[in-house]
Length: 113
Image (tube, rainbow, N blue to C red; front, side, top):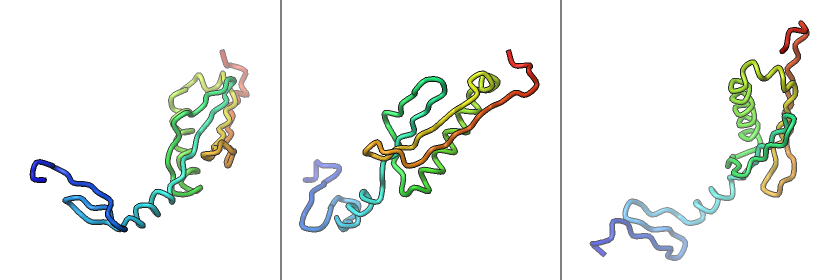
């Protein structure tokens, strides 16, 4: 065993390694507390999110949706005015829509090229 840098085994209700012993139930509860959300976007075309993000709550998923939308707006720059409308559908692990975030860009001057 001295050759092993890390020893891991599940024994009873504990996950053991050289660094610490943690009750297995606390690890299971932590995993259960996280849910994967997917942030699909429609901006004239459907852009699916195949990876998703683990969030602790629906509130965390809302915060992630706002961060993603902000990054999209920043990335688009002036091109945002040509696309005009974005819809983000936040779906759970079963692909059920749980949240929808929509935003539009509208140039009322008539100067968009």
